[in-house]
Length: 434
Image (cartoon, rainbow, N blue to C red; front, side):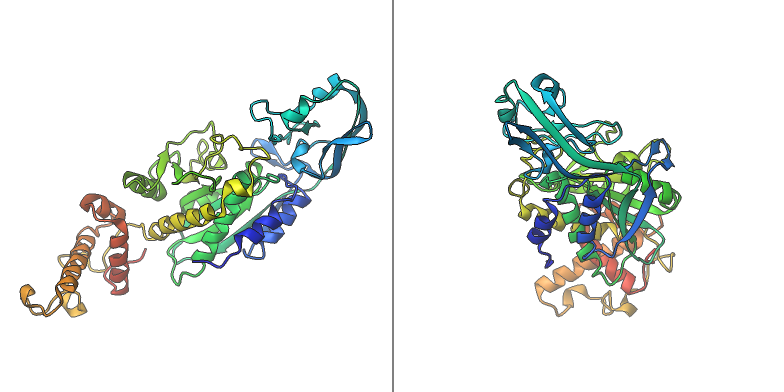
């Protein structure tokens, strides 16, 4: 159980006009830095990174469409009304001219769509279709007060040190304005996981918590960390659209398809606890960068109510009410369970590799060899024997080629039961904690 006030954090973040750069992104990152021990890393506008150029920084202060001295579209009432990255404009246009730069969704007439033009200079407004169809011929003043200037792409990274060189990457994006499930569910779940994992007394893996602007942020991050990740990344997970009404989570596998997280989510899918999807480079989030071409890192993605699959996606309909705070807690709880097991997914190796180990001298096996004569309550005797059996499986298969998930699949016994006994075996110095 964590004591985070998700509602308060959400309410601070939700109204901010964010983009892939600029004051809105920095302000949002500063709010979250109260909880994360962030290191902010920057990449200058104009810098070439792989096939990309770091874009100019964008900021906006005001925008509206005016007819007969009345604002029919007003950025200050909802920042989705302006195409993200619109350049400044101050013109009088007729309706036909104006319509070329208006965006609306006929199918969902009450929603304002979210539209961007990050890498091509443009401008535009977004509005509800029910408002759009009421527009009449006449003269309209269009006004956008924005700035495109040399600046930075930035991201925040926080690290929790483990006992090995291996890395677990947990990442999400923070670049969409005024949307809940699509935008803020990821950072809130990441924060919930951070608060829980930082309390672990022992961590096998090093945990990297990354919040970046989508696509260009992960590309910048990879330009700096790709060699380290290629050498040491155990698994990675992109967090997105983790609220909404869906009952269970859906995991998109890495392109490799056999990472520890790929295997764990498949295991829980087979038990009916989640869904899995195959890797698809034509859709998704930052996992497309991590899994690309020769990089091919073991990074998957997890959702609840998935992007594209709900009408409110990328619209003003994506609100706190739709996202549901209770679903944030549920996503944190399930993913925490996955990560807790994943931290102990490593090839099992014994300190003494040959023959059976002498468990009696470690108080793990009866020293008086008359099992039916043990003076224990029947339920405790039964539990003791089950735990001993699990320990014997772990020790028997500790040849460097198996882990506890292999044993869970082989025996049909839940992996969490093996996890408990593995910790005992490590504490008793029977198994090496690699």
